[in-house]
Image (cartoon, rainbow, N blue to C red; front, side, top):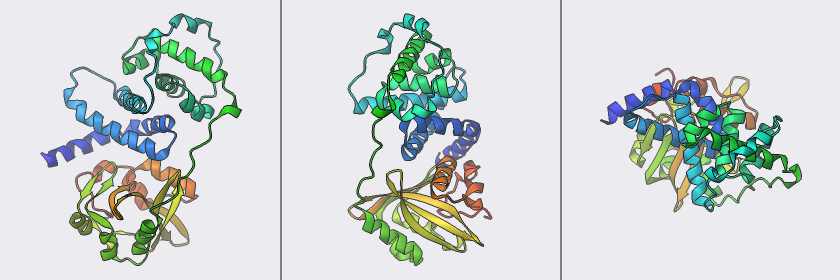
Length: 322
């Protein structure tokens, strides 16, 4: 069953590939954070794949994915904030009085996410940024088209009254309590010390190669690590990127350096319990590369352009020549 599921998931990932860039941008707009955006997209893809067998009606793939992402994000916000007033209570007649002024939504995303109710944010992004119609958004949110336009009208009014001076401060970077552990991890890579590297993982640790698969357990992790599959010359470092310590592997290619891999580690009791590897995540790798002012390595590009090719077997450093 597991083997068949891998094949089906690979086919699913391939079939929705054309919608991934727009979906990822939407998740980024909602979360305002690259790491949270990738988490939301991964959760969206998993839920979309899991629910396919239960759908008994025709649907548009793009709307289907955006609807799931919207509902997941709204649910997350509800768990963190007081319950909001139902949008059905809003008066749809007010939309006729709205002026047809173009809002600079992309420039105000942070203000929008920080100040408006969840459903208003979703409506503004879907209609103003991603060009969905009111009818399509109403279907996604399981409400009426009139209620959607009322939400949009109210959001427009709120945004017009907000001054840039009231924009909330960005989240500050927290102290890195696990810096010694991260430094040990980097040093193990620097010296190509496999025993030390594997020892840093907990017995039940997992490596999530996002978009392709999961490696679970210290023994499996050790068996899949192979220095021969890494670039001939590379160095490992860690950087604060968007509020998190990120392990970055930089390949030395002749006279240039390229971003080969990026990881985020989670620790418990001084051991790595979760290793999120973004090797197969195109949007995240491009964003990190831009932040570091480095090009993405050609080997990495060949992997993240077609991640479904590697979903059946996902060794840690699989080479494109294999």
